[in-house]
Length: 280
Image (cartoon, rainbow, N blue to C red; front, side):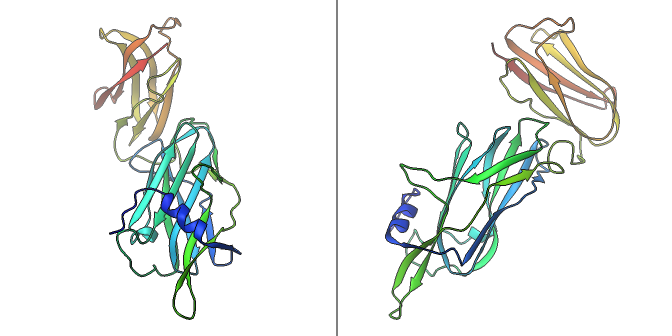
């Protein structure tokens, strides 16, 4: 039984094939992010392909710009029949390698040509003022990765020959407007985890208001003493973000340690507290 657990399989396929003109496929990344209803500071960017041959494997190494964190890659229906799918996220270098192979656990027919979503990139927006994120295809060495599609081409004796193809793709500036913080009307009140956390010296605290309300957001220390009031006002419904600069109500920098953010909506209608850690 064949069993492979890495993208080295794709590398083997590519080395055994021959490159051809990119005339069978199309590769694109959505130019506009979609909001994630499950996370108020997260957006989703679909990756789509259209393929005129029976796709056997693919290798998609990408790099994205700063200001966002790639938290997850989910696979689309286009790859539902593939034996092996993987997404290797490198948050330090802002890269991700997405790969899929049709036949791993024994032989089977190639998947039919078609079009659709192969994967979705889930980005957490670290900078609320960010308007776009740049995504581009990259070439990596040791191990080798590049944007390739792989398929079998059959001769007159119906013997398959592995062929690889490099689809054309230019870097994309994905618009976050309409898909990021502030664009989704929430269905409930919520205080989300601050980011970054731990932090030094500033951190952002996102929260959701399902209706217009009086909002109070306060910071407390481990002794239960109020350190600072960040918000105390009427606000419209929506997703909001407030920043804490690590200072108390007198403007003095506080010491390292654990603190608590507290959201109070409508004078007690909804109350939630979350831990924050300041490290210096």
